[in-house]
Amino acid sequence: MHFKILEQQPKTYIITFATGEELAAGLKQFAADQKLAGSSFKAIGAFSSVKLGWFDWDAKRYRPSVTVDEQVELVSLIGDVALADAKPQVHAHVVIAKSDGTAHGGHLMEARVRPTCEVVLIETPEKLHKKIDPESGLALIKP
Image 1 (cartoon, rainbow, N blue to C red):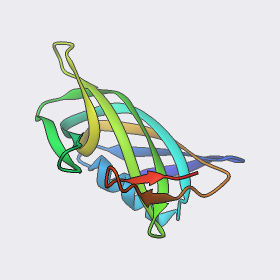
Image 2: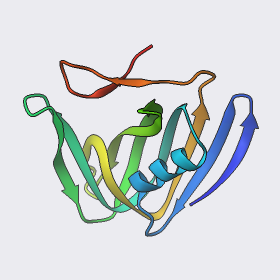
Image 3: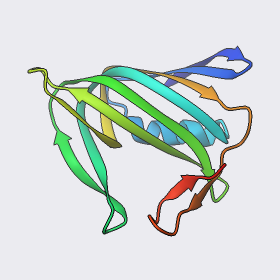
């Protein structure tokens, strides 16, 4: 993973991931290294494999829904970074397209980059905080 600061106000990064790098873990590491306390991001690229999830309301947890072990296009990735227990937490949703044009989407669990993933991340002017929502059990951004 490599990054460059494009703008100082608001602080804007371009982050590029290379073949073989794992995107979800890399985004989490980047957020921790840069001490991000509130950000939004978007990305495009491609993966050699991806695991997507969905939130199971009854179980109050994310479950795997789709695992694809073939080359796919990253059609869209959007997400945010907010603090949960004083640590940056990354939350991202993904849409991927297979060679036949079918698409799958969901919560990003894992993704192996091939050949690249290009992320534009913009810091928010204020810190964002997540707190556990008693109804869902999820850490949600609370304004």
